Amino acid sequence: MTVGTGNFAEELWPGIRDHWQYEYDQWPELYSQVFYKKSSDKAFEKEQGIIGLPAAQVKDQGNSTAFVDLLQGNQKEYVNVSYSLGSGITKELYDDEQYGIINDLPKFLARGMRETMEITHFSQYNNGFSTALSGDGLSIFNTAHVMGRSGSTLSNQGQSGVTYTLSQTSLENACIFISDWTDDSDLKIRVEGIKLLVPTALRFTAQKILETEFEVNTANNTINPIRGKMIPVVSPYLTDSDAWFVVTDVTTSWGKGFVSQDRESPDLQRDNEFVTRNMLFSTFARWDEGCTDFRGAWGSSGT
Image (tube, rainbow, N blue to C red; front, side, top):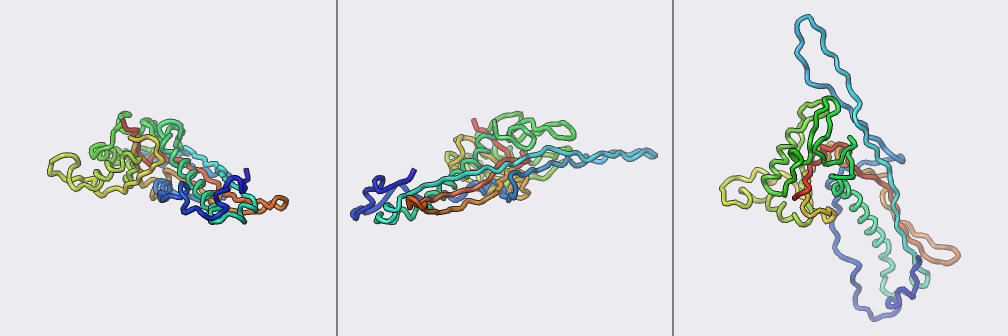
């Protein structure tokens, strides 16, 4: 659809003191705080898991060394998706509009594209207990991720599938669970919770837990060991008001957890139709997002 002077009649003459409803302060870019950004130069990219060797075994005198093979693990595929948004105006509207609002059209397009990027990325957390899958084919947050060599299971959703409301105790328990994680050969690995991701409804709860010097919500003169240990990330794009997540260094440092794949960064283009002289503006980008290694975060769906 092309917008003409009839759609913006009030913009054609002086008398409007101010404009509203179209420009507010925006949240800073959030998804990049809980995803690891990677570039892509193809239609799709694959990330292949490799299962290492188990712990060494006792070798009795005269017996042969036990040889164990490396194993091919799970594979995660990222297929780039195209996103676009456009708008057009007539030459007459561009020439006659008195306030320069039309010159902000690229800003409107950029905002729309950025909103889509936030929504699609945070859908991995929103749907992580159901339809969003990690590299092993199970839901990202699951109590039964299967270890490729031993067949044992690992949970990144709380002990025995129990859900936890956000509190100092539940966050401490989550950190303990994370500390006990292993690789697919059941070897202990050191994983740390780096960021606490919460919806807006839990922003002040998170602040109290991470900034209070002593034990939260008690009169006990006991230190709060979780104080200052994580960076809070508050996101209005989380749709469950009591779900919360501990993002680990598997994502933030290793780039093996939650991945944001950039094939073509958002760009803005402008063109004029020769016949109509209409002015066309558009934005276009290609990306994909997902979770390769479920160890990139621990999650609770709340109550």
